[in-house]
Image 1 (cartoon, rainbow, N blue to C red):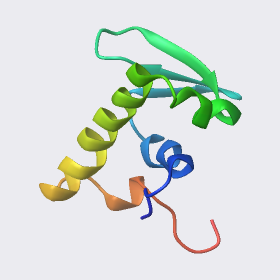
Image 2 (image 1 turned 135 degrees about the vertical axis):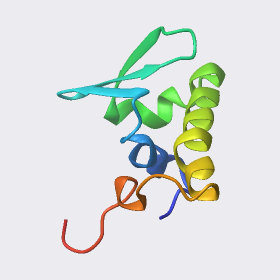
Image 3 (image 1 turned 180 degrees about the vertical axis):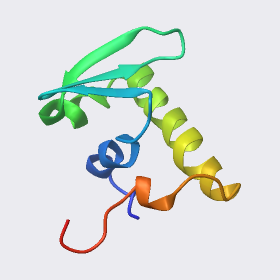
Image 4 (image 1 turned 90 degrees about the vertical axis):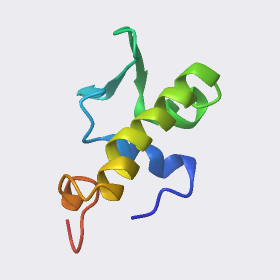
Length: 84
């Protein structure tokens, strides 16, 4: 799984309960319960906001790094293989 560039971070957190999707719109859920709406085409632009970027880092840490470190969850939830 590659999470080395900002464009791939959205794909990395798509399975998180802290990211909601409705059509072309996404909502990033912050720790305080507030939601920040954005369109996928503005992802890299949204990452310029420090609060938004930090929340993405927190979600990646919680949803990917810690689960893999603890061997919990299903790796297939975070990426696809083959022709999918």
